[in-house]
Length: 280
Ligand code: DHB
Ligand code: FE
Image 1 (cartoon, protein in one colour):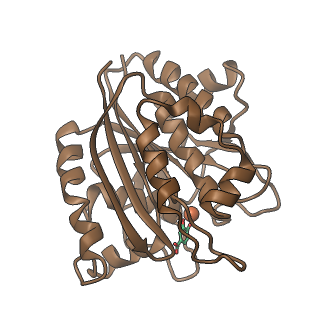
Image 2: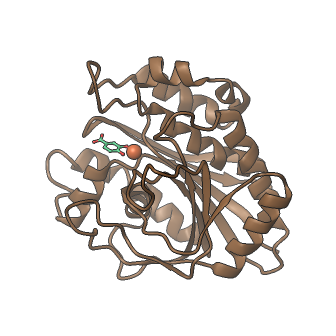
């Protein structure tokens, strides 16, 4: 049977992708960030998941704002990096796992999560940057990837609790798939940040560290953070953190094996946390 062996929470700042793509990842500005990725990359190469379920958000690239879907699961065989206005990132295309994704989709819908289905979808920095964070610059990504897209950019976003519950349903779906697959779930998105208005550039390290400190043992407390609290304490884009709660919901007995936190990266913090699932 398929099983979840690991979970990762990580920021997806576009500048991280650009630094990697232009070989600037060890310059003076980015070195402290990327040096902190080395141990995580070593760890994931040992964990070596067959499939990554990549929980991320689209930034109005694959989907226009005319139709806003709360959750979208990719069931395609292949995904190209999105053109975000300056050409697609020069990273490998993503290989999907259509059969496994279709199984997950069916399970989630029968478990009363009304997920939209993407047969075709370009993946923007929200999805490609976390792959860079964990896998650097390979010729091809070393695993199959199932993208699970969450609306965090248009109000009303789902609650943290809904995301956490979706993670639990995701675990059930994975564990009922008959193939022996080692699965990692990546929950991605910025920690505290605000890209607009008077508080543009706002970062709240105290909030970020509180979130990291509670993720393993006290996720229920994090599910109680409401939209206003995210806005006030984590900035207008800090609500991206609800995607980390899907990852956490999919873990049964997580053990933190690595953490990295660095400020600033562009307008936010670079946050990374890695869990192994002791239940696996
Ligand atoms: C930045 C961060 C994001 O999460 C994003 O989607 C876009 C930009 C930033 O800090 O520059
Ligand atoms: Fe973002």
